[in-house]
Every structure is written in C-alpha cells, then in structure tokens.
Length: 508
Image 1: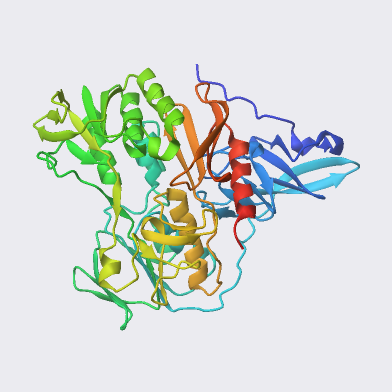
Image 2 (image 1 turned 60 degrees about the vertical axis):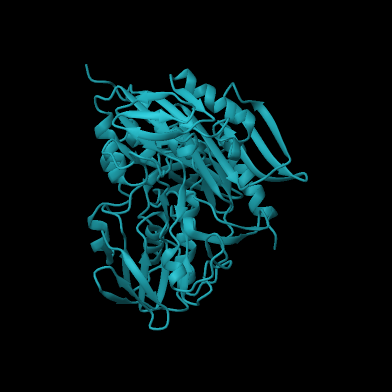
C-alpha cells in the first residue's frame, strides 16, 4: 500500500481564522495542499511559503525581524513583502500570498504573482565584470548582479570541472547517500545561459594585468574587465607522506572528490579518515551511514576543541563513538602502502578508502602575483575592495575588518562566502554597502546539527546553558566578559537571537 501523505498542519486559511486566534508572531496553516505561514509584523499581516528554499527549514519556527523572517536551521532571511531571499544560504524566493481581512477574520486564498526583488539601483555601471572562481562567493556574486538588474557582461572563470555546487552537501547528505546528485548543483545547467552568465569550467587564470585591466588564462586567452572579483577559494592540504597519490586516497573538496569516495565506499569494509575536524568528522558520519567501518586519525587530543572547546569536543567524540567510529587521537598517518595506513604510534590500519581532511590553504598565488596587499589572506576594506581599486575579493581568501570581533579576520565558511559575494556584487555597482554580516556555519553529525554564530579565535570563558549530553544546549565563548561566538544544539531561536544581538552590537 502506498504511504498516505500527512494532512497539512494548522488551520485552513482559505476558510479564514479569527484575528483573535492569531496571537503570536507566526501561525502555520495551509491553503489547498500548500503550507503557508502567517506573519504578524507590527500592524501588518503577511502570508508566505512555510519552508526555506535552502534545505526546507520550517519558517514558522524562525525569527521575525525588520521586514523579514529568518530560517531557524541555517539563518537564511526572506523579505516578507516580496519573498526574496535577502541573505544566503537561501538563493530562491518563497511564495507570497494575498491576505484579506473581513469582519475580524483573516483569509488567505491565492498567491500573488512573485514580486520583483528589491533593486537598490546601479550608480556605477561597469560594462564588463569578470569573476575568478566557481564556488560559493563567485556564484553568489554573479547571481546577485543579475538580480540587481546589472545589464553588462559577466564572465565566470572556474578551475572546477562542474558548475557551482552546494559544497556543504558533499561531506554531509550527498556523501551519506541521503541526497540525490540532482540536489547538488546550485542551479540547473541552463540557468547560466538564460542569465547570460558566461561560465567557463576547467579554466585556470594564470595572471592579472592590473594596468591593462585584463586576466590571462592558461590557454593564453586575454579577458578584459572593468570590475574583477577574486574568489579563488581554498585548496585541501595534501599530506607530504608516501602513498598519497594512490587511487583509493582522496581529499574532499569538489564534486569529483565526493563522487570518487562514494564509488569507493560501495562495497568497502573499512575507511581511514585523517583529520578530526569538521570535514573529517562529517565524512566519518557519512561513511558510517553507508555501513563502512571508520577509523579517525587526528593529531588533536579532542575533536574540534580548537573551535568548540573541550566539553563540546568530548560530546562530539562520544557521539561518533556511539555510532561505531574508532578514534586514534594524538596520532597521525606516516605512510600509506597499498591499503595499509601506518601510524606514527607504530600501529597500522588496513583500509579500502582513505579520506584526508586536515584543513585547507587559501589560494593566494594569483593575488600575490598581481601585487595585491596580502596578510594571511587578501586584504580588503569594509566594502570588500582590495588594495587595487576595481578589484574585489570574497570567500575563503578574503581578510576583512570584522566589526564584531574588532579584528581583521579570514574564515572558511560557506555562508560567509555567499554573503560576501552578494555584498561584493552590490558594491561593484556602486552601492557602497559595508560587509558586516555575523559569521555563521553549521556542522551535521548524524542527527545532531551544531550551529555556530560569531568568531572566536581565543576566549577566556565558556558558559554553558542547558545539557550538552542531552543535545539541548547553548555555549557562549567570551573574552573579558564580551560574547564573541555562540554554539548551539537544537536551540534554533536562541542561535538566531544571538546573531541578531551581535548585529545590533557591532561597532559603528
């Protein structure tokens, strides 16, 4: 017998509800077979699609702020009037519905035609924009340029073999086998032609001539620009040990990498994951979902302690051990001979697949050769412009003045790269918008999501609210009493509120 679909939650809004029944800020209901969330913002009531267009998060459980609603899962934000996805990681709008009030009742019966996104206006219209990089920042820049009705030429040069993909999925659901490959591309292949984005894959840029204002590819082609975005991202660190070049040994960065690991995992008995940080442990969880025995080898004494602290690090280790992962901490692999991974401690592990996740390095060579200011990353100002006017940088390579930590920082977070790309796009069009988004990332381990807001390289105090072992907690990372970052498990509203508080507390 086919599974019966569960009926929509909440009241049938097409039949109307009493205004008095709508007491809070949000109310989940339905129209026909579609879920709709009512949102009260001061004296106005809006009706919008109930699910985030990123990973289908429940917007009725999100946070209403300003003229928008924020997703509780990954902090995307949508405009209540237009449905526009105003803040990544969501890129597509949600539906907006007509709201009628009659005799003290609220009715929602039909969708509005999708309103156009808010366009601030182009005050400086370059004819040609070139984007170097096909990752989060590069794609978000190109997409936002077209959303802002930029009419000029966009050329995106990517060294990747595949069009821009949802990279977090490569170590999470896609690698675990719970997300099909057609979920992985950020947009279908025909999007680029329709949006008049000249996407060139397998293209390496070898030089930037900042005087002549053109870039040169490895094939010798010269491509002129009026504005340039550097979004070259980062590359995985490859261990300088014998055996790294074997076909069953892989880093995990691209769709090609993830596909190769999946192919090896099919029928594999055992895997070794080198590295006990985010990519390594997400890969470990995904391989366990495929019933592969997993050994994690890491120099750390506790997984993720450098970012999350000792208590949350111990919890992460225990969680993985509950799912059968075997740890070899304070150790490293010194050689891979055939399928035998030799440990520094003297032991060895036979493995059908080896995943190396020991960090990444920003790809700075192009920026250095072009003479851009470098400080452990490409130095940018508050508008993400480099030391050479007309050249911007975003994503893993950019070091920017962060108004929350009061330091110049560089982070390797997917959402930060996307939001920087969106800001860079608007600034290329003359909008002079400072980048002040609070850094955010999430990490998934089995059924446990860890959300992290802010940026704390060092702290002198960690406060814990709730029960870490009970998977219900919020941790604050403080320096001199000031909250620099917040990590949480199943405290979605508190995480959103922490993000909002950091936004409001930023330095002028």
